[in-house]
Length: 205
Length: 196
Image (cartoon, helix red, strand yellow):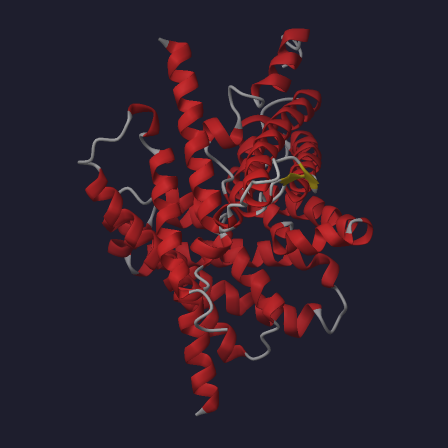
């Protein structure tokens, strides 16, 4: 589509993922990492950055390959591309961030089956040119990262009274151990989603 | 006898104590998406169990007999994902050819489960647990699939009842499902630490 690649198109591709199509709060896809790695902000941020990297790279490659894709082999092509970049990411984390790599453990390779990346490849990258795809990947990835950090921040503050390992709560604060457990993840995300749908329904009426 | 005991404990452990949905958050997408009705939840669960068992065994074989001896650990994830996609494709073709009635039940779920985190999760966790014989791998991966079936069926049962409940407008759908899931997790936490 070389005709309508005006500036607004690029901006739209970049900002769509931030709120209107925010993967976690609005589309409800890729729900495993938001629940699993958000015990604190730091792993959440690492996870988010890894997803941005994989998303941008795989969107770029899929967009370049889009004319060669055969419909029935599409998904396997997508997953093979994604798996390649996830391997790069995993090796990088293992080499330069060994502690984070240990904390995230199998959730880094599990980015491969994160629905966000396949969804973006299917919806956007397999139909539009390389620059739009990169911007789209960047936008969706950032939206995802923000969601992860909000969730991680809430859980870290309530569970330990710290954020980035700096104490922020008053001295008399009793940590809520439950927030560190799976329960905390599910309930916090549920409440946040309720809040998100409250905000959007208010805007619409 | 000892080995049988270990196997049995491992089996119960992955179903109840270390249930993948409740403790590792794997397979949350279908868990929230397909748990609307009990019969479709059961179909999804059984399809996942079957593919989990199959691909758990296949990836372990690939890993143990091909990748590790050749020192090709670097392409492990790519191999895993291709084996899983292949297994799903095979199951789909086989079921369509020989059990058309079953295909109508499973049909729509089969392509979906190739990107289900439970399946890749099992393959990865089997590596992490350091399981080193085929029987254990088979038992653990089948158990994981059954654990997923259990979780999604409980959820579907609750959601069918919840259709009648008066939920605030903005919490309808996913939010209330997540909160219910949180409470279920709390219930399952009672089993924590019982085995291993």
